[in-house]
Image (cartoon, rainbow, N blue to C red; front, side, top):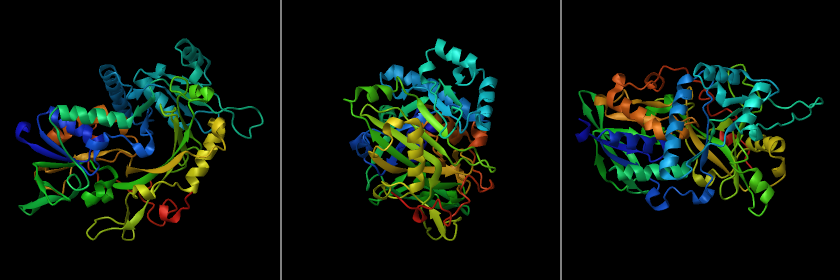
Length: 465
């Protein structure tokens, strides 16, 4: 019974917090480990001045399951906002700007799926008169912005779709909320670079197979558990090397501008009340389906920071892999860089962000960046999460909950419920996401994971600014 089952959750980020809360609600004894002293910092990203935010979208092309999960999550965010009195989710809307003056293929797929689910009315296509009329009637017209296409001689503007369901989450505040929620429910947390840093999973052999029986932390302590659940983000492969076939660490590029509160015009213009999240695919998907040009911007924070992210190319950091790692490329694998080494971004990212600023944020053109950083993601073979028992271990003793691929944060309120269902019930789980989140060693190596250390994405071969 779950009342007597203990779970050691490694990682107190989005995935780990969500899973810990859901498991505790099912009656499990839950202990969460993390090397960061979140009990002291309260998830306050001092170095980043509250720019720890992530966009919220329900637009997923043909991936109807993620569209439905996003809508499920949005309902929970709204309820949390109401009960907590905090704006953890900000429904500012999202303007999806196309690479030209016509709708792209992915956008058409998204609108068709929304039509199928009966929510097409939440979307406003800029070029459709009836949609513009609805936007005006519902108070969204001011965010259905027009942007001229550079070097066009006929005054053409980019096609765009305003998603009234979209917005952004204040991730740091949301993590703090779920940390406090988990603590109130009886989840135990062990933090710090000695006590909370997990060095390895403790195993024993049972009938010729490995069974996870706990974790060993850097202080030498062994913490026993019936199940070890690793939700370590981009560090997960270093604890479970078998995941090297599934996952790869990659860095998305972020830059910020700082708006002075005394500049009342810009302060008002870029506020969440006046400015939507804007995403732009500067180029159409190529023949293999890869997106190489995505850039996004969020409304300013309460501190006046405007965050811009370039995700068209996510950069890798290939380093020699330890012995025994089942999959490497020329003996190397990509792992996160240290925070001190992640404060600069490659020139390709700078160029893309600057191009975006010239078109969409002309007020900030030629203004120096306030800050830059690489944000380390955990990319999967197909951008779907990996949430399943690890088949190399017996008795369902090792579980993995990772593979965010840059779009996991929005699911914080509901992801754990689906993950906990899978942990508890395996193939008998009722979650509609069970087939999409399976351990999938036979999936083809794609989504950039095939590029390897000799590709220009490798940060060691990129110029940085």
